[in-house]
Length: 478
Image 1 (spheres, one colour):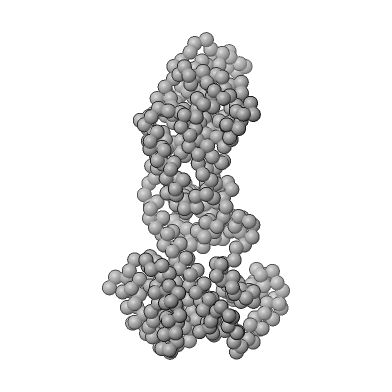
Image 2 (image 1 turned 180 degrees about the vertical axis):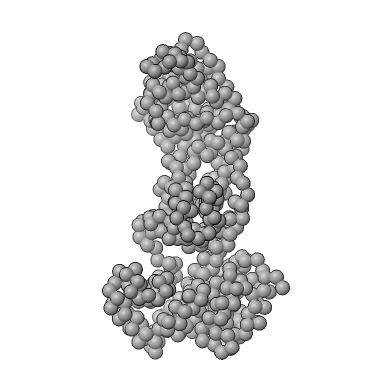
């Protein structure tokens, strides 16, 4: 039999397979999950039954008891990992049984819940597991989507703002009109200009870009229009400028808002007459190039303030394209990250092929004030530093890992905030212990507490194993 494809089922909350040696417990868990929207079913702990269900049905999460005759929870974890590594396993264990939960997570369990099981907590853990699996599947889909080469004329991303940009480019690319591209620094204005050029009839001719803020005024004029011999010191011969180099193609004037006021009339005349005069020259030369300008400044405001010529503004603003910042198009973050990973891995000759779900979550949670340029920097850094074939969360810059507010986000969703502080603390301590292979001295250092304090906490939690927390008014226990 062939295993189903690793994708979360179409069912709204996913399919849950419950494994327990107690038939009554199996029925109770299934009856509890079904009204909450989960497609839950159950089997007894039998290896053949488990493999058959994994092969024949699209299971998203396996919820298994830990201590069972015939096939215990650790064996369930190992068998699921071998047969269907895309399926997540959550272990049910006795309250306070810290060593058992650590062993299960070392074996590959995704998370655990303690008995007696609080229904709200179980629901929250399952929802979080399903979100994690969907994210992992999206990562794999995007890896496949960017496996082939990307043409210069292809823009990465399918968010509504990017779809609008693509639609405008498709409409105006065949037309010889000037295009004004605006947006925050790092949003990819030059990439959009190159896409416009690549989809136009001028694509076989040069694409020439110049940063108007990178050169002083005299050099910028010479750079654009060329200069005649003797036009200034060291001008020992005639030299053609970028308008001549871009003949038949496209010229991009980036940082256009920084264009000096004294140079603006000369550019306006060149656009109106479709000709230019080199610096120090006496003869005009015709040019045939499409002009695209890009800026992160508000030119209309600059016009009102007298810092930019109104006539030049209207001359270049024939068609305007405004690029949304990356924080306003989160659907594009992972496709862009995979595209940038493939490019960086090729350039650095590193065998990095993927982004782990944990790293993907961090990328999606961050605000990206530097937009695509900052994302590119973070991905390239991760490709250079990672020791694995996939970027993991620890490979990302610290500010990305901590989120846009500089605070480590808790690995919980809104529903899980109903947990007590003690339970949240206990879960975090357990995850740290798992990460450091149960080295309590290292765990204490990571947690920032004294080893004796950690020991007292662990001893206190073990000492509560026989206690049963009371059910709240709006929750129940299994």
